Amino acid sequence: MSNRALLPLVAFAIALGPCVASAQEFSPRWQLSGRGLLSSPLTLRGDSLDADWDILDFADTYINTRFDNALFDDTIGGFALGVRITDQDNPLWPVFVYQVEGAVQSEHVVVQAGRSRRPSLGVMMPTLRDEDLLEYIFPLNPYSVAGLEEDVLFTDLLAVTLRADFRWHAQLFLESLRNTTRTGSPTDPAALDPNSAGVRLFFDELPALARVRFIKHAEVGFLAQRADGDFVPELQDDVMWQAIGSFSANLYPDPVNLLDVRLAGLYQHGVAGEPWMSTTDQWRGRYVSGALALRYLHAPYQLDRFQASVTVAMRQFTDREARAVSVVPNILYRLGQNVDLFLQYIFTYRGGDLASLPESPEQEHRIELAFSYHFSVSLNDTINLPRDLLNADYNYVPVN
Image 1 (cartoon, rainbow, N blue to C red):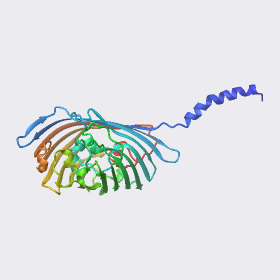
Image 2: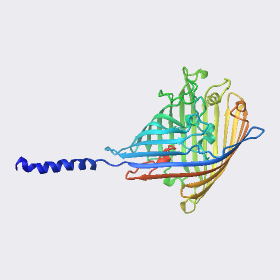
Image 3: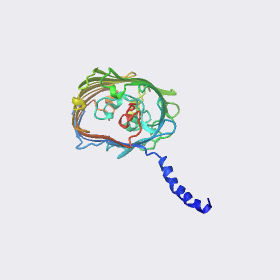
C-alpha cells in the first residue's frame, strides 16, 4: 500500500484521537448542599432584662459544593469548597470561607488537607445553631482575640483517619488554628504554622441502622495546643490540652417514634489563677464542661415531621468561683421536603468571675423563631462514596 493510500487512515486516526482521550476522562460526581436559615431572635439580658430584638438574622446560612472522582487504584479523590454567612457584627462579615479541602480515601484510610470543620466533636446537640452551646461542648481556640465562633468551629488541618468496617475509626490530625492574639486584630489572616494537634477514637453506626441500634456514636479524644513563647505565655507550660468524650444512643429505637440521648464532656487544662480581662482570657481557663440532650422525633412513613428536645449544659472552672449553666428547649415542625419551622428558647445563668465580664451578663434569655431550608443534590452519581456531603460537614462517615 502506498503512502498516499495511507493518508486517509492517518487522517481518521488523528480525528479519532481526541475522542479516545475524552473517553478516558470521567466526569466527577458533583454534589451541592446548603442551608438557608432566617430567624428573628429576641434577647433579654441582665437583671433589668434589657431587650435586644433583631428583626432578621441569617447567620449560619451556607452553601457547599464537592467533586469526587474514582482514581486508578480503587481510591477516591475529592475537593470541597464551602462558604457561610457570619453574624452581622462579626469582624469577618459578610462571608467566611469555611471549607477548602482536598481528600483521598480508600476503604480503610482517609487523608484530608485544607480548611475544614475541626475534628473535635462527633455528636451535635439538637440546637438551632452550633454556637448556641459553643463554650460548653467545643474545645475553644486560645488564640482568638475576639472570641469568634469561626475560630472555634473551623481550622486549617492535615488529618489521617483509619477505619474498620466503616464503624470504628482512629484519627490523627495537625491543625493551624487562627491566631489573632499577636496583633490584636480579629481580621488578621490565619498563620500557617501548626499550633494544635489531636487524636480521636470513635465509633459511628451505619446511617441505615442508626435509628434501630442502641449505640449510635461513642468517642474519646485528646487535643493539645502550643503554649510556649508568645502563644499562651500566661500558662507557663509548653502545652495546653483538652480531653473530650461524647456518646449518643437510642433509648427507644423505634423508626416512627424515636427517643435518643446525647452526651458530650470536656476538660481543659489551661491557665489557672490569672485575672480575666476578655473572652480570650476565660477561653484559656481551666474548666470542666458538658451537655446532655434528650430528643423525641416523630417520623411517620419514615418521613421526619416533628421533633422536640431539651438540652442542659454546664461549665465549671476549677481554679476560681466561676460557672455557667444553660437550658435549651426547642421544637421543630417540618412543613414539607427540606423546609422546617423552628422555635427555641435559651436560658443562661453565669456566676462568679464569668458574670463580671462585660460581654457575659449574669442572666440571658433568648427566644428565636426560625425558618430553615436545607438541600443536597448530586449529579453524575456513579461513585459509591463512603460518606455524603451533609454528614461530612459533621465528621460522620456514612455508607451510600
